[in-house]
Length: 91
Image (cartoon, rainbow, N blue to C red):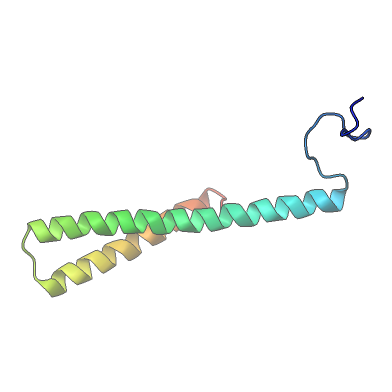
């Protein structure tokens, strides 16, 4: 056996050795998944707001109408994405 291998774990994978370490690792990964899900929801809102901005600008809408429409679109798309993620069990 090579000198750098552990005799207890010969698979080469970095696996948790105790149940507490496994639970800690699971909790850490769940937190990461939640953070990524929230960031995905915000990204969806930003993309939807940019599309709404292009539509309002192409329609020569006023500044107030464009601001209200883009803001509302951002909020609606972000909350809808977060709602779907919550229903899917990610959040």
